[in-house]
Length: 130
Image (cartoon, helix red, strand yellow):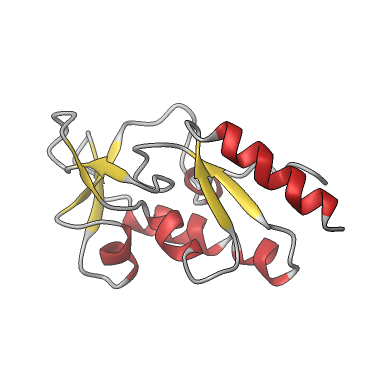
């Protein structure tokens, strides 16, 4: 129960492997409010898959099972600090992925994969506070 692997893209019914996807004209906040969509490199809209996968994390949140999350950098679902710009040209812009934006309203500390040392320290603090 210490680690819970979760991928909102897989939880939303997407295959592994899958075509790359990027948020078009916005970020995760915009996807959550219906102002932006997510397209893959095959020009198929996958917004509903991302929304469904993101919503499926609620089961963990309602049961207070998540205190922290380590999320994938640059992912249209998970990125905390920056996402690809939607042009599939590997250009990065500021913004959060849909899951990171969704989790912002919950008491979950977010880290990306380049912040593992900070995540480990936070985990030690959580465990010492028990």
